[in-house]
Image (cartoon, rainbow, N blue to C red; front, top):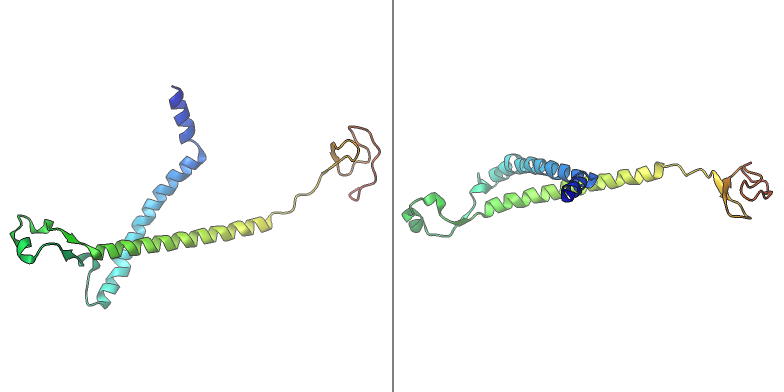
Length: 153
């Protein structure tokens, strides 16, 4: 039962849940990028290149005669370099989007650090006993030493 308790504690940690959400969002984002490449970017490029569909670009590993003699010619092996081009474009677009996202997050973090107000000092050390005392104090509450008038008081 101890292992179940440990697993529950692990699974409920914030970073595990954040990671799970990130993976799910990343998968959905990957589908969007794949659709962007296959349905929006590649058709105009194929049109410019004379009506070529990149998905159809492949190098057969058998001759046309050997392919015709196969039981199922559709299963003939080939090198699908057009599909590889599509996948590379997917990767480049995802990598660029992630780069932009990280860049924006870093800018927001820098702005957030600039906006934080300096912490107001409310305590000081007693010069005699080194205890923490209020800045406006004129006598230490620990050693009862008389203190110099502070600039704050």
